[in-house]
Image (cartoon, rainbow, N blue to C red; front, side, top):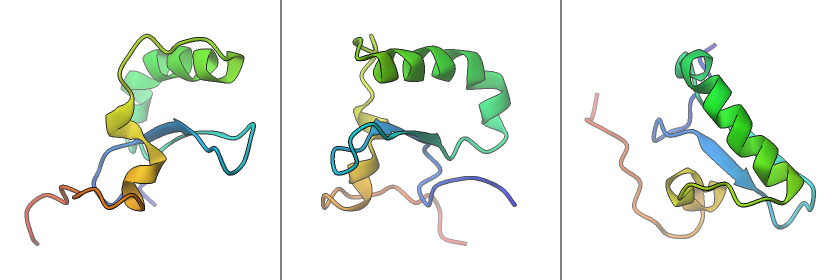
Length: 75
């Protein structure tokens, strides 16, 4: 099973409706390569420190906030 999101962009976000829950998922095979960087960012999020990067592209709410998702070419 390949772990990816419908728009092929990972989710790296905290979930306001579930305080204490931080998601970092949907990286598929790329997770191995980007794991150290994502790990640092997620550690900062969990510790309440600024991530130091604009994570808006990776927000969980993009699936429900009315944003247009780029789902790539039609198959």
